[in-house]
Image (cartoon, rainbow, N blue to C red):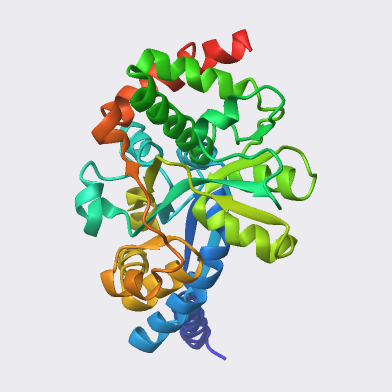
Length: 338
């Protein structure tokens, strides 16, 4: 074989290898990572296959959906630390706002990217008590009684605990007349907290599986999850006279979707949460849907409750975080005195 022919064959082989590499890359399935908070685990276990099927029917592409769950503030910190989330789905807006502040990981106008200020569903804080409600717990003031053990996840690292703190603060403000009195009211509740778990699901395990505490304060959706996992009839739900509305915001992590070329799929994934199918799955998982028809269909599951928002009653999350959850602020002070 001549030298020219060897070169020709070698060049052809190289071209074939390059083509095979391009084809392999084209055939490598894309994936999305949803970094989310602790108690949304089961929700996204249902959402992900439904969206994957809808996406394949629409585009022909098989998309891999992955999820990561933990205390919401810890999860936001993980994304800041380099966890490559395509989307982040949280239970409080500060855990998305911090991604705007720390290097522009999320667009400044993220609330305008999707309906309802980018919150496809909400929940409310409720009480779960043991069968028969042996401590007679009916409202927030009952949680301050000596001898009542209250299970709440740590407000420093989890949105579930932070919403509980703020719900109690709002109740104290409304009933006692000032935010300062509200802080003292919250301090009395936290004196009755025997353990502070790092996430809402951990707090549920402490209460329902380890049998610690007289009352668990958590999101509404957790009440049904507890019955499903630990047995019907062992627990009861108590709706306090006033509680907090907890919207669950979502956002795209900009540098990740740019790097992975997944913006189209990530956007469609979050859009799917607002679709009738997505809203039905949300309601099935006991979160309050935004779609009026889906909400009406599930009216028995979601009773009307007297709620307030952080923005309307307490001046917004930026103010609340600075006054109550920053290092050395009200929460740290009350825990030091406890």
